[in-house]
Amino acid sequence: MAGLILKNKSMALCLVLVICSFGLCFVSTHAELQRFGQPARTEGTLSFLVLGDWGRKGAFNQSEVAVQMGRIGEKLDIDFVVSTGDNFYDNGLTGNQDRAFVESFTQIYTANSLQKQWYSVLGNHDYRGNAEAQLSQQLRKIDSRWLCLRSFIVNAELAEIFFVDTTPFVQSYFTNAEGHTYDWRGIGSPRDYIANLIKDLKLALSESSAKWKIVVGHHAIRSIGHHGDTEELVSKLHPILKDIMASFSHHFSSMHLVWMACFHVYVLCALAELQRFEQPAKEDGSISFLVVGDWGRKGNYNQSNVAFQMGRIGEELNIDFVVSTGDNFYDDGLRSINDPVFEKSFSKIYTAKSLQKQWYSVLGNHDYRGNVKAQLSPNLRNIDSRWICLRSFILNAEIVELFFIDTTPFVDKYFLKPEPHHYDWRGVMPRRHYLSNLLKDLESALQDSAANWKIVVGHHTIRSIGHHGETKELKKQLLPLLEVANLTKEIEIVTNKAFL
Image (tube, rainbow, N blue to C red; front, side, top):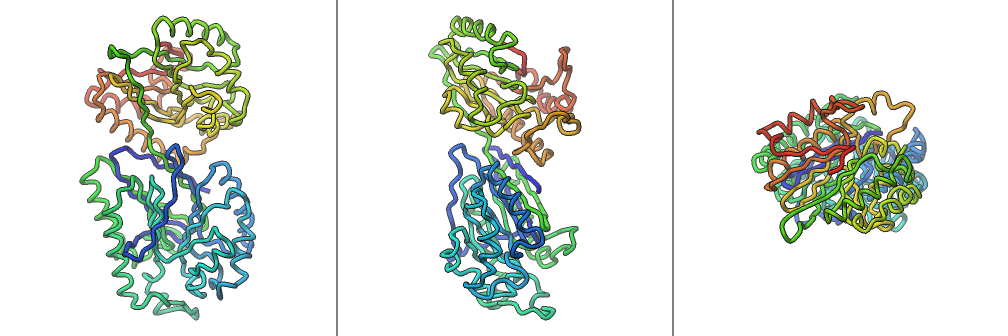
């Protein structure tokens, strides 16, 4: 099981090539190419599973993998599933009444979390059967989750996903079928079919205004796996994708190109935009706020006493909001959105009238030891409307912009020597991509900001003479970014254990 997190700046257009099962790459958008809408969640996020080479009537570990997919799907609350082809082994379906459809799909993927829309394309094994049957709408009457076309587009608001029929590109299926019979109905002249797809690819990608573009198909362009490169895609598709990338890079400050090959593995993609919140200043143009960290102890360890003093200071300063730098709930975060620790450590502690303002929070390492998704859930706002917690986000308070940064994933020891603790890294892996994108987003946001004050907020210190000392990973990766163009002269860095 592999994971990918993609984050994008507000001004960045991103092209992502998801190459799964046998891989993939490419698009088409003729007038007849169908487009389907897939709404994002209210918080602007999107999560889904990707799989390929799966339809084996439960054999070859298909049933075992389906169970794990169900568990991951539940944890991530997925929106849909993507299939990259070879949906039914060995030779596709014989017709729209073939029992293989039910035995390899309906009766296998039974978890509640997988009862979402499945968007599918064909693989070479599917073309060995009755391809028209697999594309037939009759299958949707048997299982409404099923949607399979040769090429189409899913508009998921934050992302556009371009599904492409790659099998007809491969010459050997026409010239050396090795005893197999392929159903080329609907293809016509392969040369004309491919030419139209290539034309559609350039048009669709160039016209798309989505922040993320994800291209899905069956065959890999380049791969070190068993099947190796697909030479026809290398020669016909790769140059086009490079040209599109160069075009976007010319107009936008950053662009991400991800090649992800997965042979008989399942890939999770979770997409989210860096959110921006607005906090008006006072009528005189001023802003005042409190900063607190390492606090959630059910009133113990002087938390209640400090909360009382915060209330007095908050009243005296007429604060506009509160910033929390993480370690919001000790010792191991929240277990769920119904964990009573939330109210015992937050709602019932910070009761002063002056503290009934918006709280903007990030996660600390202790929060990552619990159910991170619970602490990030907007459902907590139904319990206490003051609560806003995200991994990273921007708060625009007119004279000041605050840049909240998720610092915990930077620290190596939480990954290399986590014992005896367990960390919830959902939404973070693969770590290298997560951190790279976060740093790019921060750098761009700081440079674009016109605020008089820029305040960077996170849980871990960069430099400190305190008990924990400096955080070498932040010193190496984050500090140089702040030093560029003398940014450190005008940026305040706020970390835990601080009151402002």
